[in-house]
Image 1 (cartoon, rainbow, N blue to C red):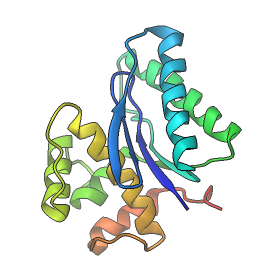
Image 2: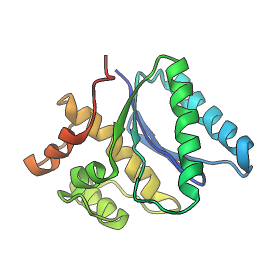
Image 3: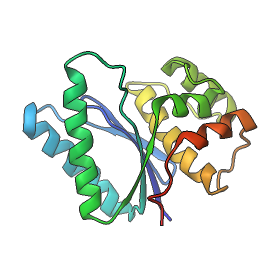
Length: 169
């Protein structure tokens, strides 16, 4: 199985597949931006033969208008993946943070620091937090299958309990 981690954002969508991380974005606005990001993500899905995509779930505590736009992007991406018969696992944001650090309320800097300490991977440069989050989402799915090359604590692995892996064939 080829697994992709996807941290959706209208300005910098983090992607991790085959242990490579990158970000995709569009300078367009509105529907054109949604279509551009969908096209870029689906090109990567096809190029790598992705079978499963782990997507960070919505932050329901968001109160700003941007929450609607990210919801639109999430819907567009989920439908495109559905059309390609790619399984989608949704990872709650607190589960991503808990898996990375052992605590569900960790901020993005704490997540990057913890992952760097564990793996030696660097998240320097623009959009490092988006790439790191995508890496964590992918790694969570691998850990669910017991395929992770890293040692995770029982506290970190307990974050998997809040994730719905039922879409995985």
